[in-house]
Image (tube, rainbow, N blue to C red; front, side, top):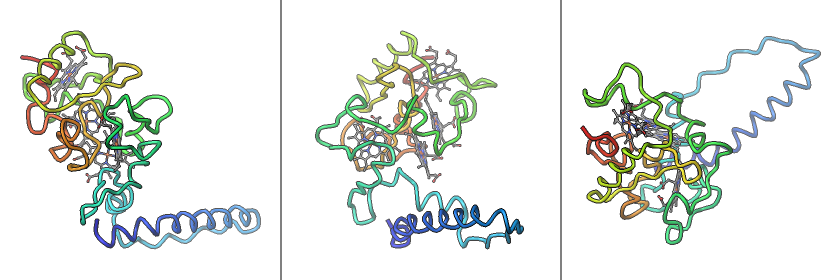
Amino acid sequence: MTASKKISVFILPFVLAACAAAFAAGVSSAADAPAVPAAAPKPPYTAIEAVTTIIDPHTQISDEGHILWEKCIICHRNVPDLKKEKSISDVTLRYANEMKDLCLGCHIDRKHPGTEGASVMMSAAEAPDHLVVPSQTVKQNLRLMLKSTPTIFPFDPKTGKVTCVTCHNPHEKGLQSGKAGWGAGSFKRLRAEGDDICQYCHRK
Ligand code: HEC
Ligand code: HEC
Ligand code: HEC
Ligand code: HEC
C-alpha cells in the first residue's frame, strides 16, 4: 500500500464525520433558509480512484508485505485465524440474507457468465442464472476436475447454491497458501487460474 492510500484510509472517518455534521446543520436550518446549495467543488480524484484507494477490500497485503487485518472485517465478522479457519464453513461473514449480498454492496448484479468472455460453444444471448443449487451433473464434473487441480470451488454451505465466491477468489494473492489461495491473482480473480473455468462444471 502506498503512503497516499494509507492516508486516505485514515482520513475517511474524518470525511464521514464532516459529512454528518454538514448534513445535521443542513437539516436544522432547512426551514428558515431554503437556499440552493452551491455546486460542490470537483474533487481532485476520480470516483474509481476513490473506490480503489479507500475501500478496495481485495487489497489485503501492504507494499511492505504485511497483512492488512483491518480489511478482513469488511467481509468477515471477525478477523479470521488463518490457521484455524480453513473453509467457507468455518468463517462468519457479513451478510443478512444471501451470501451474494456480501459482494453486491459494491458490485452490480449482472447475470453472468454465459455471454461475454465465454467460449463460443457455451455462450448464449442471455446468461443463465448461475446462483442456483447445481445439478448432479455439474457436481460430478466439478468433483472430477478438483481431483486434478489444486483449487476450491466452494458452494454456499447454508443453501448449497453456487455463489459469487464459488468462481471468484475474494482474497489477495499471497494471503492464503495452498488450494484456497489458487486464482487470487488471476484474471477476474477466477479460481480456475487461467484454465477455462466453464470446463470445471460443464463438459463438452
Ligand atoms: C471481499 C470480502 C473478503 C475480504 C475482504 C476477506 N475475506 Fe476471507 N473470505 C471471504 C469469503 C466470501 C470466504 C468464504 C469463501 C472462500 O472460501 O474463499 C472467506 C474465507 C476465508 C478463510 C477460510 C479459508 C477459505 O478461503 O476458504 C480465511 C482463512 C479467510 N477468509 C481469511 C481472510 C483474512 C485473513 C482476511 C483479511 C486479510 C480476509 N479473509 C478478507 C471474503 C473475504
Ligand atoms: C467494499 C467494496 C467491495 C466489496 C464488498 C467487494 N468488492 Fe470486489 N472489488 C472492489 C473494488 C474496489 C475492486 C477493484 C476494482 C478494479 O480495480 O477494477 C474489486 C474487484 C473485484 C473483481 C475483479 C474485477 C475485474 O474487473 O478484474 C472481482 C471478480 C471481485 N471484485 C469480486 C468480488 C466478490 C466475489 C465479492 C464478494 C465476496 C466482492 N468482490 C466484494 C470492491 C468490493
Ligand atoms: C459460474 C462462475 C461465476 C459466478 C457464480 C460469478 N461469476 Fe463473476 N465472473 C465470472 C467470469 C467467467 C467472469 C469473466 C467473464 C464475464 O464477465 O462473463 C466474471 C466477471 C466478473 C466481474 C468483472 C466484471 C467485468 O465487467 O469484467 C466481477 C466484478 C464479477 N464477476 C463479480 C461477481 C459477483 C459479484 C458474483 C455474484 C453475484 C459473481 N461474479 C458470480 C464467473 C462467475
Ligand atoms: C461452479 C460451477 C459452474 C461454472 C464454473 C460454470 N457454470 Fe454454467 N452452470 C452451472 C450451474 C449450476 C448451472 C445450472 C444448471 C445445472 O445445474 O446443470 C449452469 C448453467 C449454465 C448454462 C445453461 C445451460 C445449461 O447447461 O444448463 C450455460 C449456458 C452456462 N452454465 C454457461 C457457463 C459458461 C459459459 C461458463 C464459463 C464462463 C460456466 N457456465 C461456468 C455451474 C457452473
